[in-house]
Image (tube, rainbow, N blue to C red; front, side, top):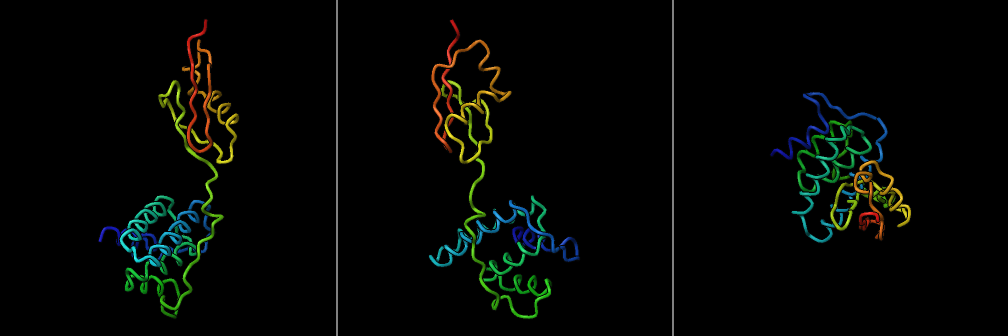
Length: 182
């Protein structure tokens, strides 16, 4: 019930429909297309319980992003129709549709919205994570090490130390092995 109240709140603020014709941003589209991919796969494989958890995650993400774009919320209403048909019908009609949500075209995810542009990795010194930072997803190991060693957070670990070895695996790890100079 709490999840359904949260889901409903994406569409309504109080008693007023809050759906706008604003263009969605990249994060909203990513949340939507991730959900479309998951729910479509789950329905095809009769794995309904994981769809509900995916809805909960997407609803939280979209609520946090304060999403009220029609381009995101209409497909959301279509996606939830197999699980909550009455709510889906109410939302569909409130958005101005005269046909049933069951006649709507099932949304198709677009892989381009699912591509990660950055990766958050922990930066390690001598095998211990000291801080985390974002790296471009396509960064080379050399670029990753350069970014990590030039970060302001890294300076207190590098002061008076000599870099012995660096290990950087894109998307996985950045480890800087250091020892005292001298």
